[in-house]
Amino acid sequence: MSGLPATRRTVLKGAALVGAAGLGAAACSTESKLGHAKNPTPTAPVDLGAADAVPVGGSKLYREQRLLVTCPAKGQYKAFSAQCTHAGCVLTRIEKNEGHCPCHGSIFDTTTGEVIHGPATVPLPAVPVSAEGGRLVAGPDA
Image (cartoon, rainbow, N blue to C red; front, side):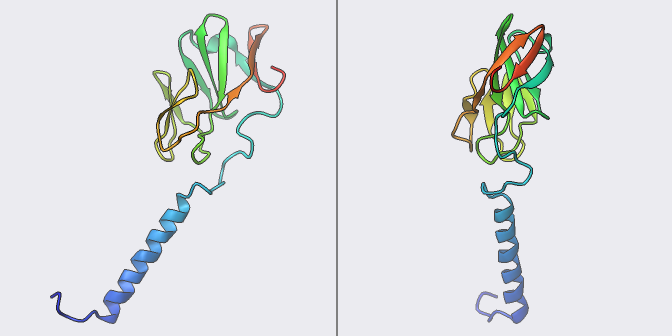
């Protein structure tokens, strides 16, 4: 069959497939801003609730606030943006102090913000955090 000339139908099918592939690539572009915060870190203090909600030696995801908090030792806290540095998606889960991005599979160390697995290459930005009266507050002046 390889010696037969291409029919109009075959050519049109091929063109449609190439066009569809292009649309898929555009939807996954790192330039996409759909659903992503312009600022990956808070611009004002954010009350995250009870400090003891973050387990000692563990991490907790505050997805709505786009933050994650880790507690390396009792009374000590570190916070990071939970917005992936690759394409801006918000992490969806933390397992064994690893934050997982649902969009392209990046994984971050929630105790340091460092990238464990790409495509992300830049660590999560640190966010100031403090425990005041048994409550966690993250963001500027925290």
